[in-house]
Image (tube, rainbow over all chains, first blue to last red; front, top):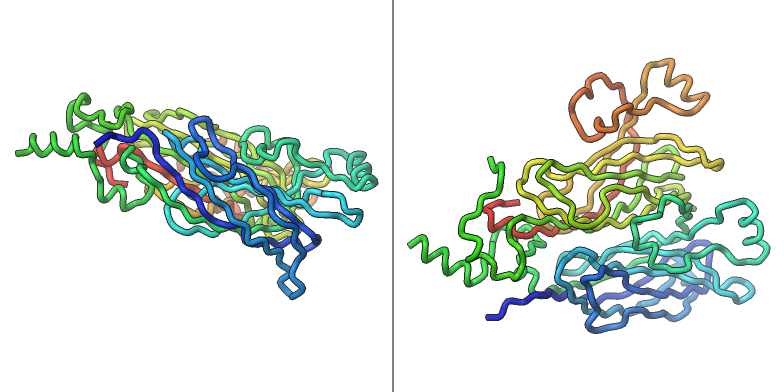
Length: 206
Length: 197
């Protein structure tokens, strides 16, 4: 049996819904941010949802019901893919204004996961910028949305969380155990030692 | 009991993976989600990782500082700060722990300490939702009176106290809020050394 050198991570899921109490007419874009060892083998790296109005009931939810499907391969869990979602809304003049950035790691365990992501926007760094942003109706946004998936350089940003987004995932993995990775407590309790090694050990014991 | 992980067979027989199997590995993948239960929620957090001598970081950041969140609803502050660290270890002693300092930033950009806390990284693989409780030194009665009127408060001179138990008995402290973490642990090669996590 050939020993695999890569493992696969299959992600399916959806951008379900969101709450943005102050806004209406919102759409989302999403992209994946991952390390150098990782590659996407099928599915879309980036996509964009429809524009939705909030429900006219007491929940005031934005529902997209938008599918996410992607398969990744990698040799190491380091640089595990993150889903970056950024929501835009149309203001009274019909221009696009950013309403929130959200980020989460793709869950590392197989099964179904449902996450509620805080959606935040960067704030103006000075009072003057705040004033011009108010006049021009354009608020600050990240040039590259993938910065929200990075840990470095965040101490200089001030943000405001103004909504939440619900996203669900179904995760399947292949060949993690064959590469020696334990992702569940049961993996450690039931070690599957590769055939070659198991053979030599039983030979020794007997 | 296990000072160093002992191999049970010759290395040459044990390399069917195409990788070095000398050391056990731990991946820590997750997020500092946010913080709640503090008197005000315009917060940011400084974090770091402390581990024993046998542990080595192969990739990822050892410490950092989150964004400042000034949330619309004052229930909690959200940092969504990603963590992705790859450890290699020769032993299980000194399992890594994460320590935090929560700071409050007011409208003028002045920072005030709101809490210290630490958690051990979980030893079992899988996804973990962790709440880290925090505390703050109060000092004497007169110090807390002056803090009420003037702001600023006692800090730890030696931040090692956040994650160590020595010399804590001299401190007078008070409870603060909680830090919320979502952390995934992936282990590698622990079962080969006979370690059950």
